[in-house]
Every structure is written in structure tokens, then in C-alpha cells.
Image 1 (cartoon, rainbow, N blue to C red):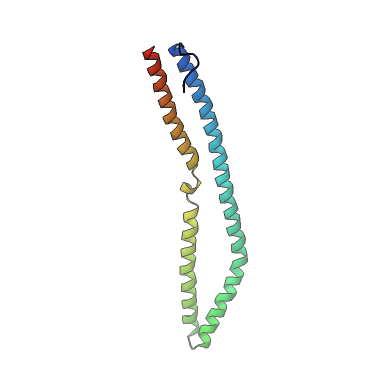
Image 2: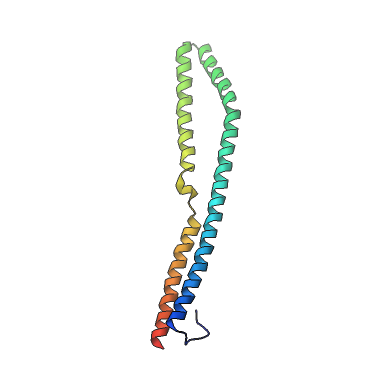
Length: 140
């Protein structure tokens, strides 16, 4: 980025760089707060939907599991064996669903990745501008 005044002192250049860096860091912090807020809101909504669905699904699941046990009993299974088979299947499916749900609520999913990438890009740009300013000062 060329400057209008090429005869600035090193102190002026450093002062400008510090002022721009401070403004940049404020903007990046604001962006990080917004991104984190959006991610947390999305996670909170997901959790609320999970809880609401669980409240409605638990009674329905109990009724369906009882019907499955009854169906096995009608087909000649011992009541204890029928309950064990259906209960084991429900337990396995429950563990699978909990594992999938927990993986989606990991901290990594809530990280402000866009902001982190932008800060890294901004840092690289700031370094490049400082080098160019220094090179211009040395050339002058």
C-alpha cells in the first residue's frame, strides 16, 4: 500500500502501524465474539430441540418396545428372552445415538474458525506491510 507522504519518519510509520494493528485487533475481537455467539446460539437451539424431542419420544419408545416384546412372546419366545432381546437392541441403538450427538457438541465445532483464519491472514498482511515500510525507509 503506497503512502501519500514517502518522507515520513520511522517513528511515524511505527505509530501508524501500531494504531492500525490496534484497530484491527479490536475488529477481530468483535468478529470473534459475534461468531462465538452465533455458534453458541446454534448449539443451544440444537440442545433444546434434542430435549424437546426426547420428551416426546420416550413414552412412544416405551410403548413400541412393549409391543415388540409382546410380538416376540406371541411367536414363541420366553417373556424374559423377548424382553432381553428388545432391551439389548434398544440399549445398543441408544449408545450409538448418544455417541453421535456428543460428537456434534464437541468444543471444536464451537471454535470461531473463520475469525482464527482471518487473524492469521491479517497478521501475515501486517508483517508484509511492515517489511515494505521498512524497505521504503531504508531506500530513502
